[in-house]
Amino acid sequence: MSETQNEQPVQPLVEHLIELRRRLMWTVVGILVCFFGMMPFAQQLYTFIADPLMANLPKDTSMIATDVIAPFFVPVKVTLMAAFLISLPHTLYQIWAFVAPALYQNEKRLITPLVLSSVSLFFIGMAFAYFLVFPVIFKFLAGVTPVGVNMATDIDKYLSFILGMFVAFGTTFEVPIVVILLTKIGVVTTEQLKHARPYVIVGAFVIAAVITPPDVISQTLLAIPLILLYEAGIWFGRFFTPRSEQDGDIQPPVKT
Image 1 (cartoon, rainbow, N blue to C red):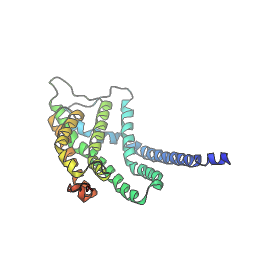
Image 2 (image 1 turned 90 degrees about the vertical axis):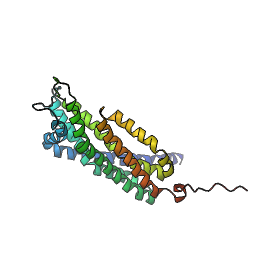
Image 3 (image 1 turned 30 degrees about the vertical axis):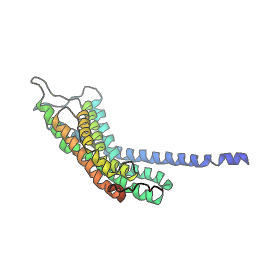
Image 4 (image 1 turned 30 degrees about the horizontal axis):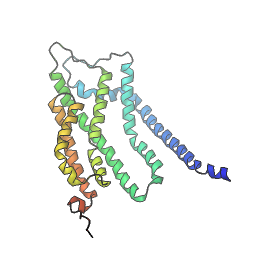
């Protein structure tokens, strides 16, 4: 009898691990299906990613490959990145299917729009970097290249650079979600966020100076959206903050 009682708590954990493994396998399958489906277009995908730099390189200048296998593996890495992004809805569904049984109904109603808005903002951040920031950065770098120096960028290092920028801008565009969550769980109020505005403005430019190349334009292109997104988070956070906290009307305890 005691052995049976000892085995009962273990079974749910085993079931959860089996379910987790199944969801992970389906996630990997989804990524691989997208990856192999796009492999015939790997060169075109890399050309699309490299276009912001190629459009600003000096005439008769091209990118180079310092590694023997880089011309093959770099387009493969780009394709894998694109496969991960395209299969992201399928990946999120697998995560949702795993955690949903443990959530209450009100938590499910909150998480669904939260996840969708987070993914959308991350994609918007990547698009902002690709279409607006990259052309400005590469035009600046091409313009400050010293005379006699051939601006020939290695394709592997270029890929590492743009991936880092994609992550930086995608993460930056998640600021409203972070602010709303902090407001929702009661860590801060909108009034406290407003009072912290000067520090956020300074911090935004410090972060931009660390992440972006050392030119004022690209730093401003990251800092300004960060500040605006913070303001958007404050505005949306009002809908998740109790009215008494928004107005600062929390009544002190009555002395007896």
